[in-house]
Length: 505
Image (cartoon, rainbow, N blue to C red; front, side, top):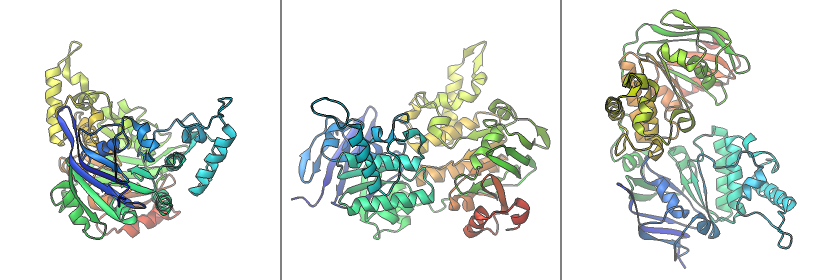
């Protein structure tokens, strides 16, 4: 009898031009939460697809409870008790929770062949209650929050009698409170006998849940350690192959003239009375608890959600912004929080994504000058260090961190002076974070004004010159970063006062 429920030995997977996995190893014990960490592009996604039957390995063996297995498709893996829960929930938003849970393995009357809806609703309710959730099984999946949708995905895994559950970046889009609830559910699954592979870029996830951690880098197996055997710094070295001695490479830029001023900006039902200034060379962090209205303010500045109260000034002149076209003409660029849905054309090449906002620069008499376009795209891709074979690779083929770099490069094609970055390092690894921080610092040193929306306190404290704190659609603090602590920011994020009351926090 094997000591492991799952073993992968010498797994290699080659795609055209890329060795995604190169002789990797992994062992999972019964009732264990085992973290899998590595930079974007380390091979984690391919590894998941090997385990779940999406891909077959070119070399190596996979064993379940000591017996070698091969999967021709995901259904083979599901039948043997393997399930995966992804960061971006793959649900059917227009169907009910029950339909999502039992999709592909519905309860059917053997005689009449009719679906047993009453039994399915009852079982769905029971599964959700086991997870401590009161979600109505008859509710539409699309009406649920991301955290609730992930709970439904876990219930779906349990409905298939899964004993090996893979969680891929499940906390990336969750608040701290929602993450704590997910931790509770994950620990309950472990205590009930499930074995869990937990993939995350967040060290707090690893330390909070896992007993062991395995690190991949560039498709290779680096090592496996007990969670308390290696320091955080050593984990970073294992993941990126070098010391990240200065994770926040903040360049002391010269703060110049005012380039953006908001006065009493508001959008009915979303935010009100938002006022702050941004100067050349300044990185302004816009922070607060999730739901504070930070993204909505940025979308108003960029013309996605036009404001209906207050005034906006660019370089001292009052302006009217009704659309993104208006803001771009004023020199304002925006990197959205959801890079895949709002920032990229995933089925287009890297180069075309980069040049998309400024195609008129590379056209003559209606004809696109592709050689000129390709030259600019290649230069900018190299400037932000996009890791790819060529600029013609599809954006969908890139890791999350490299996709984010492409969106940053896209901003640099336009003639901008104000750049808004909404959660620029969300869901990217520590190496990609350091690279994005370096780009931000360079932009500030070149005289750009940068607005950075962030929920991560170390990022806010490490990269900003000024901090604007919001709660429930209002500014509750404008703080100079020289003497600020994390506690000061949290205090401002939780008070029920106006800017005038707490501006001196």
